[in-house]
Length: 353
View 1 (tube, rainbow, N blue to C red):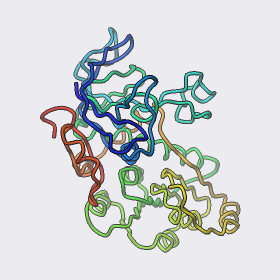
View 2: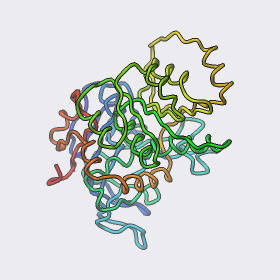
View 3: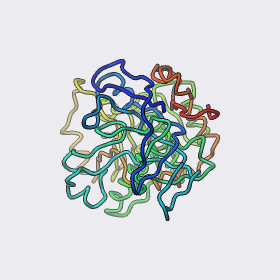
């Protein structure tokens, strides 16, 4: 079978390799790969900046945004051949910390978790793969064309869950959300804001192309002006920050309404410095009972929430998020950035591209 492999920490090593067919172990599903989505993490791995091979393997099969179709299932399984599934990315560490031992592996305390296609476990970027039944999530058949969006949606579902938990400290009836960044995470965060009936605003740098169109067709408001001005005018109750850009983070922290909640989902780059009056930020957070929280990865329940979120969404809008599809034989094209790319997908089977 064909698979997308890379030698982590060595740039330019992404290739299509011929590998042996996987063997299904007890309690596992054997899955035909349908497609994978690519994100910034995949591009960092391809650039040699990130990634770890499984023990005793010279390569890593990439792909953590999965979509597959069950070929074989264990006896008495809740899955059947033909079912659409996605595989959960993270696994608890071998000697689990307190969080991992309780199924909260997205909140791992010691960092010894493993991740499919990223850290010490082969990913889903192959024409066949296996997954433990307890780490597989079923999809409605109508989501076949957009099922690769489940994993990024699970990340956003967790972020919104954190907002809800924090807001529950006291009376909390938010009216307005500002999402910074109109990449896949930002757009999916905006989708949830609209589904919740919130006045939803999205800020990004571009002035035209698919991002503004997607935001407006969602029924949200698009901005590409200075972030400090936009945040100051809006005074959002909730901010979902999806850029990781230090100036954006600084601006939103100073411009939420009282009891505002800012959830950081973007990871900032190393080596970039920004002068911030941390005393003023501290004063604002303390006196307004504001909260800043970071959120990364997702647990099993967030994947299930993601399938429900996508099932309620307009299929045409979801499809429009996928701005490029390439076959596995043209994978190098998927890693070439294009200004109008939103979500790039690699098809793993014939007839879907």
